[in-house]
Length: 136
Image (spheres, rainbow, N blue to C red):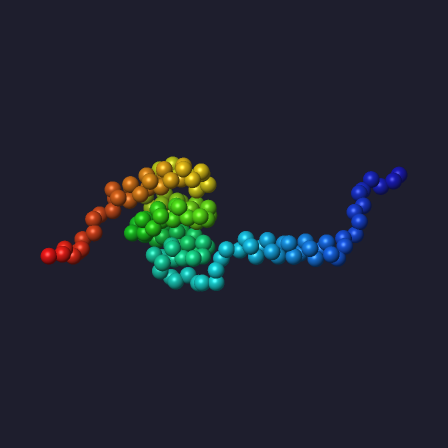
């Protein structure tokens, strides 16, 4: 009885090289992380150039119950990186217990409406700054 297993021709070196080069270019292009290390200051790390640092900072802000960083977390809901948006909304939910219908991978108009609701919440819950100097 003859074998029905399909036989593929051996790969040519040029094809292997092309595939390897394509994979290397893809990985290089998809790597958005910078070499800049985190600063250790959550306020600065939430706006860091590296998305991974921004994600870690959002996680830490929620873990440390840093409600003073809520305004920055809300602004990060407009980040171009979907993962940054996702971790920031999770941090906000943990800190506030609120939802406001934000979906990190929703359409831009849907996200904008929800961000407006988050910004309104920030305005309502943030006490006015004291100690501001009045000009004579």
